[in-house]
Image 1 (cartoon, rainbow, N blue to C red):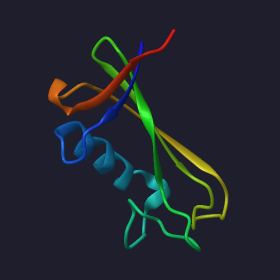
Image 2: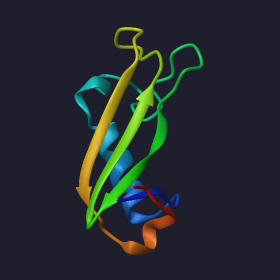
Image 3: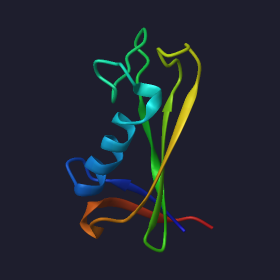
Image 4: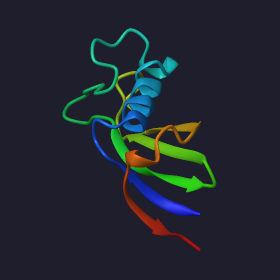
Length: 91
């Protein structure tokens, strides 16, 4: 398994942010990929690659829905290997 960081403006980067934007926790928000709440916003925590499968996590420390911590996992198949900007083997 590898810990990876996607390059901004890559196909996979766009896919994970689109997935976060359409997550039901963000319904009704003007800027669902930001979800600003007193300076707290969505944070990309990184992704793990196992074969072609990708598991990504976003975290929000104080989501405007309920002022609580929320973690949103995004699972997908790698779209473009050129999307990977950083990769480190994890044991």
